Length: 112
Length: 119
Image (cartoon, rainbow over all chains, first blue to last red; front, side, top):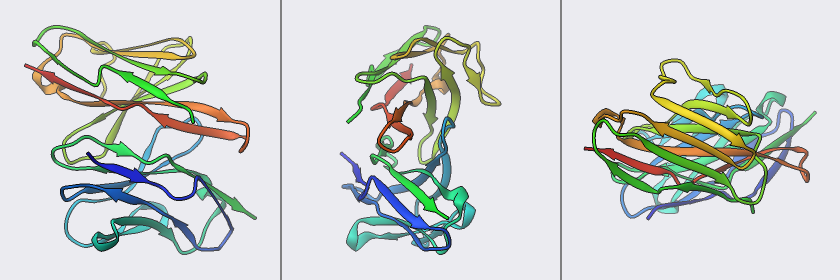
């Protein structure tokens, strides 16, 4: 079975600072990895995903994530935080045989 | 922490029959629940937003007469796949929104998902 661990349920950064949201996964087969963002009272929005190929994945809104197999990690980063980035972020893992499993989520707060 | 229970976790049904999937928030009241569908190797697709006591809001391309959503209470939302066909076979997952006082903001919690196979 697959699982995802998001380190840090709450992360606070200043506007303009680096955003780093951590995600580690467990999977016995090559994983598909996803990052989603959820704004209040809205459904999930896909930020980016990794399936195969290049391990550095670029997504929307300036976010990117790097798949590191040796570390079983898929951390999400953004060089410069914007106030509009404040939201809840979910890391998820899936593969061709299994269904999507989510981390517990990380609440990102951006301070002016 | 908050728990969302989705039932059943898997179901096999005959083509033409209807299947009901339940999503319950066990220890909190969820004013809003979301229903998603996952296709193999793909990300989730939002099907509809369900608000307690009102009609669900469906995303474009989702047939509301086929995917009936009922949110009768603050702890229960149901998705009924009517007259199921093999192409409806998929993984369906629900999410419930709770207000977290400690952060004065909403948080989302996910059900375990339901694997539907229509034969």
